[in-house]
Length: 89
Image (cartoon, rainbow, N blue to C red; front, top):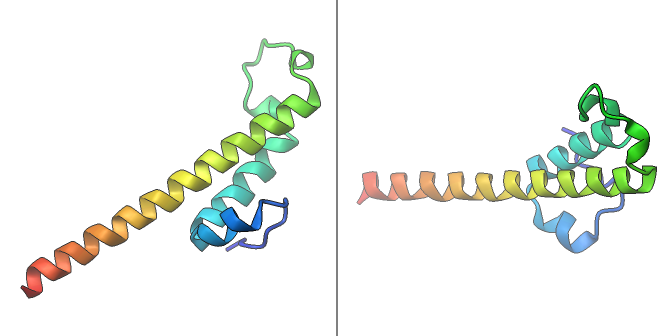
């Protein structure tokens, strides 16, 4: 799993995220930042989006994906704990 902070995410967020969420950020940002053609409609003129704007869009998408992964994992863990407590109690 790719959990090294390769793209300079602020340490406060990076250390808060679960390793799986860190991996999601790295993979999402890494795949989006240099390949807008993979995410934009075929007929769209890709020159409309400035490179800096695309980098920001890729960063925000990766951040949202990592946050969703982190919160989804946390909720899954909490549900599993509740199920175990219910069985034990």
